[in-house]
Image 1 (cartoon, rainbow, N blue to C red):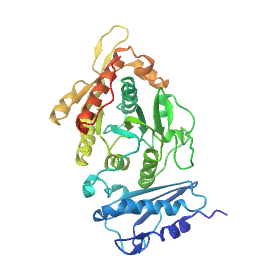
Image 2 (image 1 turned 180 degrees about the vertical axis):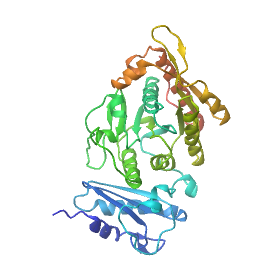
Image 3 (image 1 turned 30 degrees about the horizontal axis):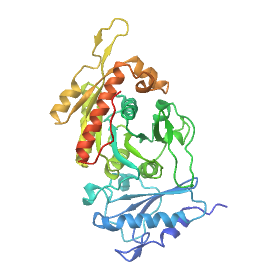
Length: 384
């Protein structure tokens, strides 16, 4: 009979004392949203913004307390500062409705207490590639940009942060599951010379992820912080579309060096791109610029140029929003074919003119990251 259940987890957490209140964290009302999935445990610690200094030590103590239980394979603890802790013992089932902790600000995020987001060991810079809506080619763009950065001589990795619709396994042509050497951390998968982590490696491709916010937050934290990334110059985060729980988790709890917004030229896409850009600005993440994807179509037979989704909208939007326009990427069958085949254009057809566009944008992104991060010495970039 399994001994790992909510009752045993609560009992373990009652041994963790909150020094600010002199109570255990369960009685103090800090524990929310316990989830158990085949030995993997996740829960939320709801801290007041004023408790930022003790938040991380409490998180680690709570994590260790649950890790000591039999049958526990991993523990993910998410910090939020959605509201002041209650004085009574809360219900410990998965939260829903207005108590959804995914809408809070993490205690260690800049919008909560002015503190710095904790760094990720081995990773020098993290850049999010985001879009306000789906269907604009964000994942394809993120993949080719990551490979372009690697071609410039940078040690590069990709984190697929789209829990509900992971694309990187197929785009990168990688199959199999990550392995672990210690039972606690995962080794990233590798393809085309870069490291990759995605929920798509952990569940079958056709399995829907029917998860609420806290489980998504926990999964993202584990895929980022419980992975042995090694020495990485730049991690590209392929963000899910929109401005929901997953986006806020990454924007508020990850030390992003900047964000790149991908949009198609038409007005309906630019409205959503503007929302995504403003979200990053609200949480003090520098916006490195906007890319216009599917900017135009060149007929492979006659060479005629057709602006199917209009043209230049992203450039004009960048000017209005006072951010850089990073470049145009055309709607081209070669980009689609190589992506579907798991052989992205930048590596499978490096001499293609469109591959050069990706490399030029990647070089500009890296230059802007260096500007944002100050005077730290950069690795030498070699243009092929």
